[in-house]
Image 1: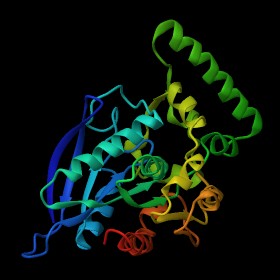
Image 2: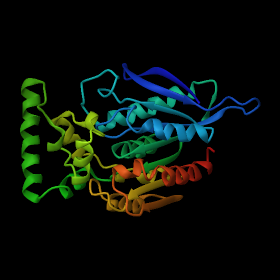
Image 3: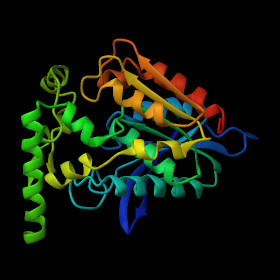
Image 4: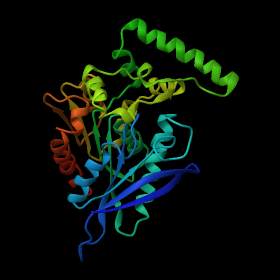
Amino acid sequence: MAQQEVSFYSSGTRLAATLYLPENRAGAGKCPAVVLCHGLRADRKVIMPSFAAEFTRASYAALAFDYRGFGESEGPKNRLISREREEDAINALTFLATHDRIDPNRIGMFGISYGGATAIGAAAADLRVKAVSSVVTFGDGDRWTRNARRLWEYYALREKVARDRERRVLTGSSEYVDFSEILLGTPAEEELYKGQSLSALRIMLPLETAEDIMGYRPEQVVHRIAPRPLLLIAGEKDYLVGWEESVRLYELAGDPKELIILPGLSHYQAYTEGLAPVMEATLRTFTRTIG
């Protein structure tokens, strides 16, 4: 596997990326490729290298990139706007399509957590995406936000978001808060923090991002992916997002589609203990159109 640090532009903003290429075999021709979409608070160096290694082992090229404002990419720090993330993912695909070792007609998208929603939205908007694998993601940001809280906490957040909307109009800036005010953690996640496994994910996010999340509904466009294959993978014990979100996406998607619920696995375990079954199912799905 060859690994190259590269960059490309999205709406004039430079995005940092890592390109993983499989072994160059004589006479093999151009290889299929996949865009790797990371989660809400992460960057391309968190979790994604493990998946990239598995893809290259299966003779795929893989591009992991940092969305604008995250990791080493340019842009307002930690400002998540869902439609901009979709645009970044689509531009990542365009970048891959220019590479002389990659077949531009055999590119898929793979996303985890929020990146899974991004992959769905990007594929719905761009027919060049030939297959999608979305892992532990959601279909309706407002429903996800509401279900993760007690009712009074949900309405308190909405009031805070409304005040921040006024602040942005009057001052031009959003209030940054600890990510836990927007994305509630779980006891299992807190244990990982204590062990420093997820310490890089403890970040501040603007309340503008909370408003964007609550207005983001990839389930409204998931049907547009058909007739390209869609794989949805959820964890049975994912108490951060909930497997019900993937079920709803599955119900609204067209064929061909597949839903897998990993027995006994939490949100983050889908990236570790679940790595093998996630990759097995993903490669099986991708083989239909790009393998």
